[in-house]
Image (tube, each protein chain N blue to C red):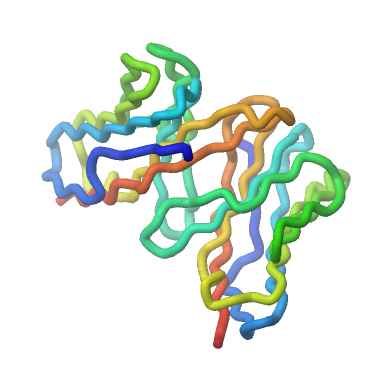
Length: 110
Length: 115
């Protein structure tokens, strides 16, 4: 079974700081990487996808991928209270199935 | 916008009952998925379907079955509900992104309590 590990939370950051979330995966054949945000009681929503090594920026979010190290991360800059949620890392190989990590809960303190 | 809907937000059932959870997507997606989500365990894949009448087992199919008679609709069936099936059930559908990956879109979820 493909494994996806995320750094255990909860992660508490002050408003305006950078939140750093990490994810490692076991399947070297993984091709696609996703970060989902899930608010309490809600379903996951996609915030970032990344497919090649390096950084990908979208607003205050930056995803970083290093396939050699089997590592993907998400940085949230200028963290806001509305960023308080659980962040799920998901990984896919050549098929269309996703393997999810258990999630990291982020709390942004005002 | 992609829309995935699930028939119920909350359900309470008794042990031994047959339970149907329905999912409908409006984007003509080929692939549909059923997950359950439990605290500390993340999302676990129960079943998925890549075409009408086609299905494949996921990681935890025991105690569940599925039906896909139409492309837009994917049903999860608990043949005889048990208390360990109390969970949040999430349906998703996916489309190719054009860069080799598939983006999954989730429904709002059904929180099932089995008494």
